[in-house]
Length: 175
Image (cartoon, rainbow, N blue to C red):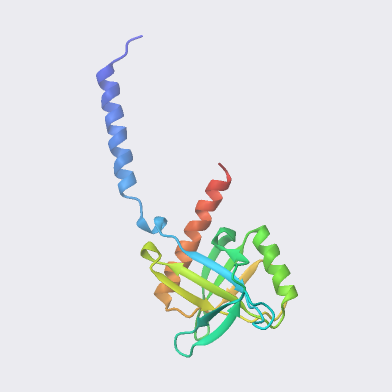
């Protein structure tokens, strides 16, 4: 068997250069992440451990929440920016454990609010309490929709970051 070391080294060098070039050309959008925390409203007279947060930038509203989130970005399967009459909304689909939590809390707390916190952008610079949709019924499909207190560009970054997290979580679950 004849083996040419030079040709092999040349192929190895070309392959390495192509892989490095492909790695440098990857889209930075895939590296952006976002955080999402869904809290449940607390009755301030019942729970002294509650935390007061302020929502809405135009007309601020204070809401007392449970300090620990019931859902996080780790439970997100997908996020979507929806077009609605007069604006846009965010739709977040949760995994099986997140869907179960969403169903349990929505069934047990009608009339209260889900209070949603988001963090997104470069180095997670944008931080805000985004929404507080009222719980009107049991949410059994694992999907939470809300109209955020953010502009369209911010919401695009939030949705993109949540989807990147979901891909990363899915990839890690198969390891």
